[in-house]
Image (cartoon, rainbow, N blue to C red; front, side, top):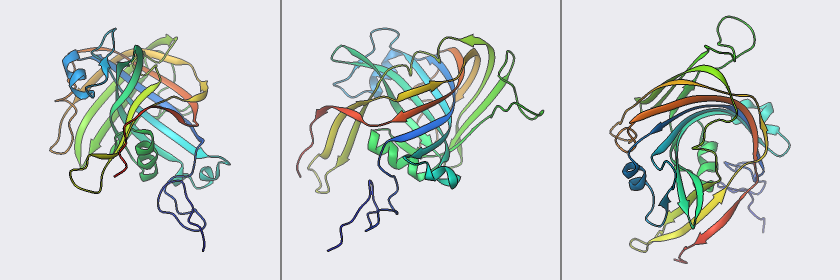
Length: 269
């Protein structure tokens, strides 16, 4: 009997149809970040009961627009770029578990199905959306340059509803790309049991972070940000903006090679 192969479904004898190949996964791209403060009670409400607020600036939030090119081992996707290129916009807070401070993605929209598959495997709550961000090039007039005064715009929509808009005006080089998304991620991986009323068949708390970071120069500046809700997505109502802290831009590369199981509460149902 022929074995079925693949990292994620669909499984086939060759494994070529799998939505996502096995890690490691390699990423190159840019991050446009806007950091702001909300009431810490809003962050508390979006965290599971067994995860605590961060001890320092617990109301800090980052919304990040990422323009990615990614591939698996061998880089075959780069020769068929529809399988390599995508954008995402994600919302990050900080939290604490057993005395360790983590970053945690609490909302995220992406433009490709393979990115959703990878995200669910990692515990990112990915949904499909429409994401756009200004690209910086080194030639021509249809681009800002990486310099003081450059303005970078970004938008996020889902189901034809605008959820977020931002403009970052770069002012000066920065030592970092902000502080909210600066820790290992702490996520929940879960799947409800197929038997109704039987809880979660998959219920894991996991942590992860990138390796082999290859960082370009970071810039910081002023930021404008507006958030909204739709009938199908919550953003403004769960993490409204009280004060904008600033914006950042950076080009980078990173590798995802796996994570760590913090706690497994899965039921064999």
